Length: 87
Image 1 (tube, rainbow, N blue to C red):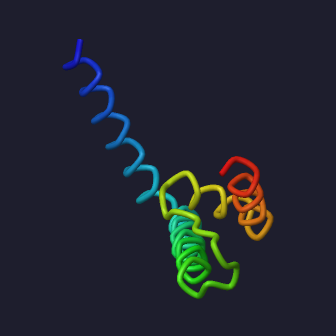
Image 2: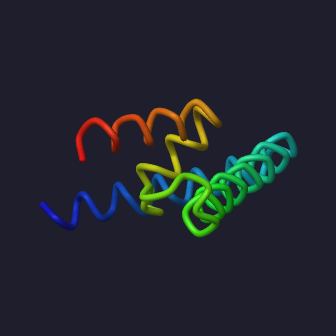
C-alpha cells in the first residue's frame, strides 16, 4: 500500500512540475507566491524580535506563516488575538 501512495505522490509531483514549466503565467504566480512567503516570514520575524508588542511571541511555523500569507495584517491580528485569549 505504501508503494501505491508513493507512486501517486511521485506522479503528481512530476505532473505539477510539468504544468509549472509549461505555462509562462505560472512563473509569475510562483514568483509572487515566493515573494509573499518571504515577506510574511520576515514580518513575523521582525515583529517577534523588535518587541513592538511586549510579551508577545508568534512562532515561525507553517501555520502562522500561511495565515499571514493569506490574510496579511489581519492575519497577524488574528494570531495575536488568539494567543492573547488562549495563552
